Length: 421
Image 1: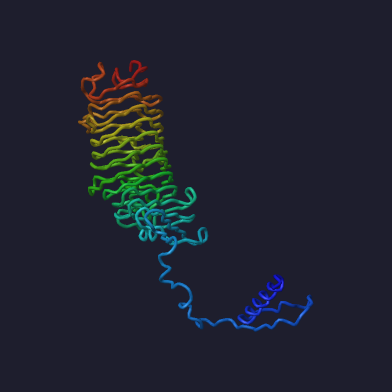
Image 2: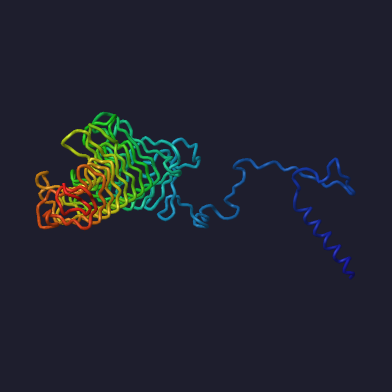
């Protein structure tokens, strides 16, 4: 048979089968602008299927069989979970939650919680079992966590209570409290053996309405002797200002912290309360370095505000800090053989480096190392040690002063470049 004829017969048969087996639904292939050379193709109009008219379970694979196929979307997985918080849904329309606490409550260990721009008037508590959470503001300082008018529990705006390895970064965390005394205790608090990295935040206005003389209002608190609270923290690269009693406090045996690269700024001259910029106390351990601490100034005679205060037997290293415009620069009180104060720059304070003695109620301030500090333009003293011992004759003090620079000293033999008093 001729090959061309065979091909024509096969093609005609194929067209016949297709034409017999299907109906074309839709407009005719000829319209007003075209000419047909043969008979018009017959068109069968087919109505749309009604909802539920066809049992789709008989077609293809059942939905149940598809559940385990392909990547599973688990927005709260322990490895790559991301929960999105937006207070009004305008900045992040794909939000999961309107409040930070709701996101924390529903998070799995290791999740990330992105907080979009807005003001969140709430207290946030991260309890045990929420290890490894990361809370962050989508834009630096654009997510504001603000103290509610009435605060409860420990009266902390953000509290890490028992959770480990929590990260809090890029927020504005702010008061004030709602009343004139003890309305707010802490900006960020770490307790119940929890641990946290607190970094790149602005923590501000942790105070009562106005500025009361009540002994509350600590911007960052790691552990606490009262109540037996223990915590571990890394507090780095924050701006901490306008607090009531303290900027950063690390307290209690078992508590420890690294406090570094922060700017800690007090309220300035005030007769309301004696502030301390950074305090380590109650047997805690801390590494305090590369901070700028200023403007802790109490104007009432007999009590001093201090830039960096080391008190009550902590194990502490204080080094490479710039401490200025405070009543006291760096103070040691009731510290025995557990502190090193070195390579700091203290200037324009009432005193530079001060080791308190028994006359000030600090009988155990002894055998600490005070070395390589620069203390200038402090009045009346750059270097002062009230203790009595065998170090630095003719000063004969209980702490070792090694190659410190300063012009004014209360006893000869403490600082180089000091002249007769």
